[in-house]
Length: 294
Image (cartoon, rainbow, N blue to C red; front, side, top):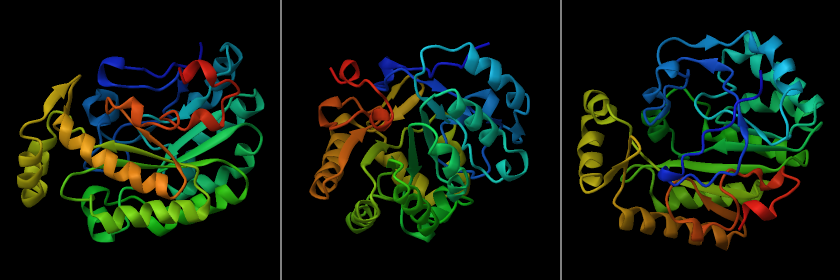
């Protein structure tokens, strides 16, 4: 019984260094983001299910796992969705791992993350917050039940003020929807203002069934995105924008990020030369980086 390794799919342009990964919850995340890629996996469909056995199993998993690479929470479901207030599966796992000396990588879009600052300060920790738009009217379409832009920024500020490294993920970047220059500038400038260290960017990569669902719920958005992805390509079960189109989008955002003095990275895009740091943000919690940067 060991910590599970994160599945690095190089054929889908994944450049993540080795790390472990834990999803404390199964089923469809409560935030109901329309862009969710986890729905392609059967374990992350249907009602939310807390993995209560993890609260006991995590002890043996930590004891039996070497070396002590960073542990990510999580790659397929938010570790701080509302049900965590009741079950505290995430907190229990974090407590055990921090006490065992594992570095932590938190990936969330919830301001509840500030609850566990006391644990984060016990070990090397990076908090990565997904922020896709500053506009509520857009957020209500793409991530209707997630915390507000202001709530996420406020959480990041509290965490950064405690000396814990923070990263913002503009993920996904959705053509025609959240690519407005002023909106991107707002996310980047506010991030720099509160002490965020890095911006990581990834374009929308729809999974099979995405367009069918989108057509029913948001027919106008469906029309524009269908056209945007018309000359894209399927890679490992994901529909990618045309390579040149997504390169231009990413380069444009990169220029803004560098102006504000932040580190920049892409996630599963195939343009590693654009990165000034490793993509997942764990540069700030790993003791050895050289072998991951060459």
